[in-house]
Length: 469
Image 1 (cartoon, rainbow, N blue to C red):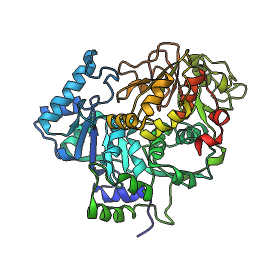
Image 2: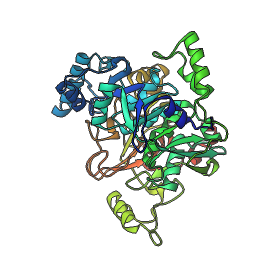
Image 3: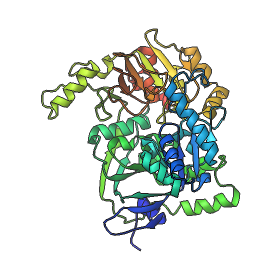
């Protein structure tokens, strides 16, 4: 057999049917659902008199709409309807649900790995674009539409065209203070929001191997912001240690056997990717987005484009106008009124630790409203037991319950029109965090520093290498 990439291996293992010049039919190992994209799918199942084919391979939670203060008091009518519908549908079709009373509740892409539902070699889908997060553990995971959600519920399969493969190899070593979020923002800023279209990205190289599993999730989470179908990283010893002991993960001899199988997933020597890109990790610095898509970003020592020789000038001018920035504005001169640490990109315990290390013993600027939203109720409890919550509260942050929160304006947490937010989320589109809101994507340490000083600040210069080593 010819050498194969990890993508090809997983695809071949899950192939149910294949015909020339037609999409393949894939078996789906895990179907994650939440309250926003599932109601119509369940209604379609009900109208056709069908059942959920394999309820035990489906797992539900509620995250997008729920308040992060007074979580049981849901005032928005649409949000309450969606949450009630999820509860009703899961009860009727016997789908496991982590509801608001459950410690397992949280952002769907946080709890999947946290609970041991996400495992190497699995095919994982969810009606949510950032399903690519789960690829950090060596799964082939991608978002699907509502009609596809219904198809998976009914059949546990999905029609898909086989994607191309793209290797992004990040070599060298990161500078102290440079986070995984900076790595993926650097890649997107360098190559654009469409370079991954039609591909599944495999991230490789010395930098990627040095990252923790949590950090790898940040990388894979934002692979779709490069236009990719999904992103993944081959499992290794870090992956296996991460999985061990988790609630739904294999145990004992079953885990040992699984690890042997997972170890075979790595891309074979001599396998060919459709495309490959090499990134020098040592040249990456803390990043800040200045515009209205993730590619519109610069290093903290850089500036917004000066415009003189820009080819896509009209697009850049529109972005600068929306963001109310002048051409050539240095990143370190941009002031913020809000800071949001959370989302499926950066709300895990390690993210909170990194931000807490920056703010410990200091105070949030009086000009800034800063909130921390853990990715799950379990993460919240662990952060409180570890003393991280106290550090944030003493510094002047608001400490919240878990949920998608200010990542998107689908709940009570929104940025007022015309105001700026340093956000650890994944999208900075116009209106993403609220009508007229201006979003700047950054890493947790950069967000924490912005909270203290009311503007973007180079964490490397402020705290020195000793903070991050």
